[in-house]
Length: 276
Image (cartoon, rainbow, N blue to C red; front, side, top):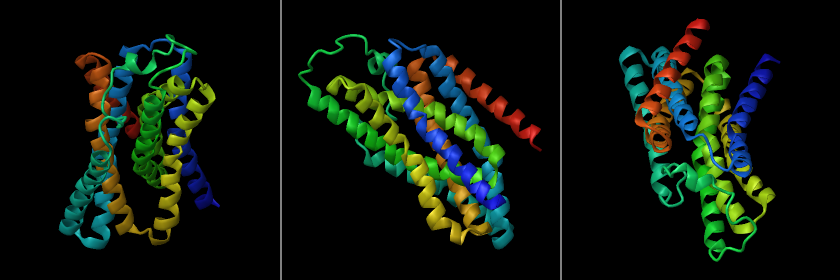
């Protein structure tokens, strides 16, 4: 029963992280302009949480798991290989998505969320806007898939570590929801359709968790878990450095992003100490 409860908790946390794209969609509809300084600090905070927990907690646990079956030197070597393998995976996914439709290429916030002007008016480029929205939704779904797997594996092994990761990914997904919903809303004038596509793009995270559970759980061992956790650490660090921090700087001042980054690390460090 405890194992079933653990799996359900892991799925639930992954679903929460994925569905935060819907929050971004709602913000796009109800806010004519965002507090970009707050968004900048929040994105920096998310990066700080993910970098710290990846390097201090997840990487360490991966190495500990791999040392058991492989020994000290080989275990450490495989941990490093898994870490950079995770980075390579998410980098390849980024490379396969054109930058114009890639939601992780920073765009200035007011361009994404100013929905107050031109409401209800026909758009000459509605087809292009719709295509942009759909490709953005697809891009986000592809990116969210490994994030979902990472969140699920983390929650299954250490729920106390997974919760701050879920919060960080949820904050990270809110601007992505905006990026999907706004062009679709501009193209169709249909808020429900825009919200639906935004929400569906976030479902890739629990789908990633489901695939991970069905494929990997029968083979889960210290070796499998160690490699997965090392890859998760690499994915999280890459997302933070390649997506969160550039976006944080794009939305606000450099110092705001760094303030959020350090604050995220401090909060993560304190939370880990409390669970020791």
